[in-house]
Length: 323
Image 1: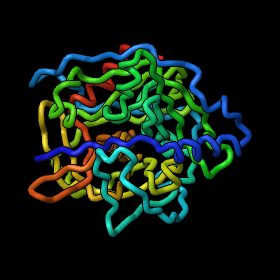
Image 2 (image 1 turned 120 degrees about the horizontal axis):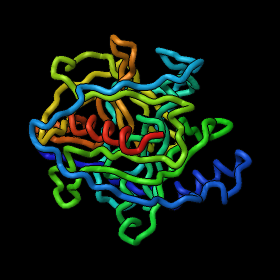
Image 3 (image 1 turned 135 degrees about the vertical axis):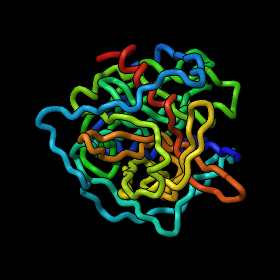
Image 4 (image 1 turned 135 degrees about the horizontal axis):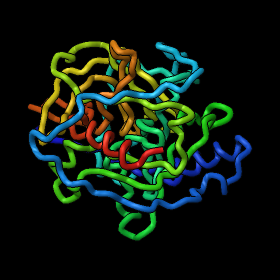
């Protein structure tokens, strides 16, 4: 099995387009410049085989927050685009049966996923999983900026460049990052392509957050999973696209991490976006976040990253970085 991670930076043209959207909404260019730099990067030791892991984590629905089990959407016309300016990545796959729609719903839990940008010029998706926590893809870590001694990441829940206002629920810079200590082990990183980010602002207290679970084999083929992300072929990665009732086809375990294959339509910018569902106890839990494309026996599929290690990372964050 060969893992192909999605790595794409914004082109100068795309960055100016995004900045222009802010200016047209009445915000100044200065307002788009992150005001708070990241402070710390935590590399946790790898979890040993058989180590305790919570089976699942609950989410949080604030009092009086409106809820829709099925989101309001609009049709979209995806645009063709190149694979990125650096040429060092293979894009995720948009299937012939593309079921994506533009997400226009402003209720819970559809507002919990947002756009992630960083000081390395990368953009993707992330989702609230705690009072001041988001989960995203590990490969969105701004490693170059961290190496230079100064970095930032920004999370904007339900950001939509085509709506007014663009960021109806505000935004927050990231203060700290946490992931497993495996930067020089590409195989391990591929199976654990998730990263926890601590926000300066406790947005989850106001908006709520998702619970989490690792994937169970018996869930294969069930069309119960919903995905939100910011694909590059929809508004240049600045508009939220949603797919409902998607399925997972296969899953593979490695070092407490999981690969999960899906035939949902994904593109650059979807990385870090969640796949989630309602459970019998009334909670909404994610089972993983988008990583990249995975090749097995010549068959290339989109893939998520999940597993007990992911659930443990979120659990660690909730206890170590409380509201």
